[in-house]
Length: 174
Image (cartoon, rainbow, N blue to C red; front, side):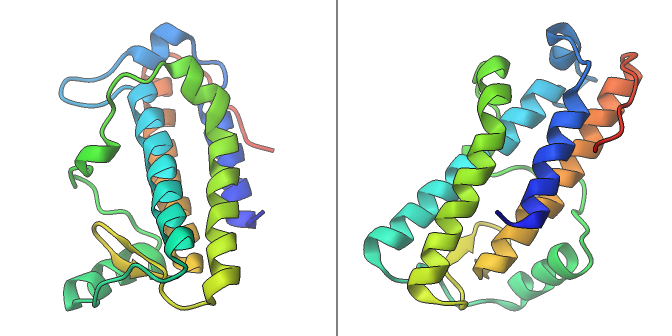
């Protein structure tokens, strides 16, 4: 498995360690709770898997042409490892009430499954662009992995901040 995605798995687990279900459900006004942030991440992984399943089924890239906006956004996220705040999540990745227990039980396996699906398509089609991201445009397999690492770590910071504000002691990932 990709080392960055392994790191992401560990960071997610460490971020919620020690949080009670009640703490995971608490949130600041107009903001997501830790449970909702985890569900959002979970939905991004399941969505990426579905996209790459379509790539594998058609045995071809499913990319549009890259625009200057795509290139600029990719540079910021992938080269600078910076996730700009305040962007509204695409509708299919917004929390909709998946039980937190299910998300916690499956999120690490979902990351591994996503990585395997990306690898499968990369082996099949090579290192070129494979699938469009809704905001970043056409991405290669490596860029998809980097996006999920940057995006996931951005949300891990939010989860840790929520936990600290609600009295959860921070744990250091191994």
